[in-house]
Length: 496
Image (cartoon, rainbow, N blue to C red; front, side, top):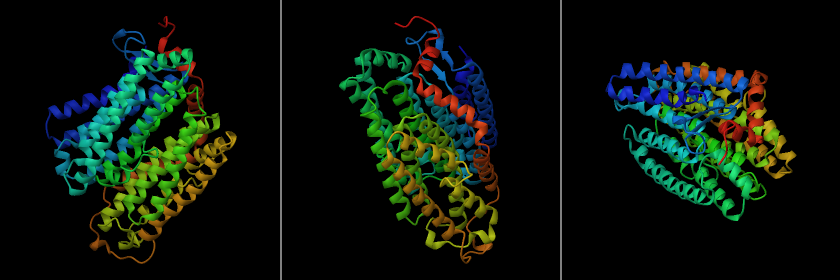
């Protein structure tokens, strides 16, 4: 057992509690939140090293062995996502320091932000289905507060839809958990995998699997994404960036975990359904991204397209496709954060999110403009930036799995992504300058640092892709061989 496994959950949680106890001391909140996320990131990097050298790390809480106790499991897939989460969280906090405003800061923005990260990291590390539900709820309750904090009209309107959809999905989640427990008698993921492998994935279990797919699809924005564009475009930039980068990814992670570890016996039903949902997600998301002339809506629909594309890798279920999905997942967390921060900065300067009301920003802000250009190319998968390798591998995987139609849809929607994002660049940064520096509604002071960090990371990920290949390869190896996860959880103890 390794007690380090639980630190990415405990550190932000305790820090959040301390902030609440010390009241509205904004300076303390700022320093403690950034220090907390850096410390959590260092722990996550330590876990990556341990998993690489010693294999999957586990912790049985209270010393109760699985499946009777609560298992925490850190494999390479989960720890890579935690490292990326910490990086994005640090940059969003830096951006929030200069943009979120004193009022929101005084209403406990930073502790709630840390509680959100607690839920995200907990979802990545838990080895138990009910605790996955609990971590989802911690994350969602924090997001309910963050989406409404500040109390603007648009936030309150979109938050009602956001809360209702997530309450419904949580209700369905509980029903699925109850059915699964009634059929198998366990909720430990490793034990579930064993039980279903023993008795076979019959019609009832496949039905429960599809119900869980619907639940996680509502959270991930896979086909059932109608709530997402409005909800992600309503909050302030720092919050929208963390939402766009992380929240759908937790749903994606849950789908990957369930359909590679537990429900992998009937791929002709479950994985074909994921392929169809992924294809529809890409098509509808691309239509939305191309149709709008509003920066917030274009970026929100681009979140949707990426969800469908990552799911194409899981649907193909080949080594290359899964590797591409992990590469693309890591890339997408980073690139969505930076593109939302860039879009938010443009709106901050121009005072509007409508493209036909802004022009020529690059003349006064060349660094901002060229960072947007690099990020736009990376988002579209242009080599050698970070989105390229994931896109190539997922497409290769779809062809290997004879899902040519899915690969073709992925390539066509990639062109639509490029068109939609370059539209923002051409309308917003190119052309004649409508606003002089004095006429601008805000300033970039303090906002370029977090954007620069993430832009540098997306370049480094693209150029140094071989540097993380060994980690991604190990993550895929674990996903394709559920026995490794099961052996690590039970640790040689008798399995009831």
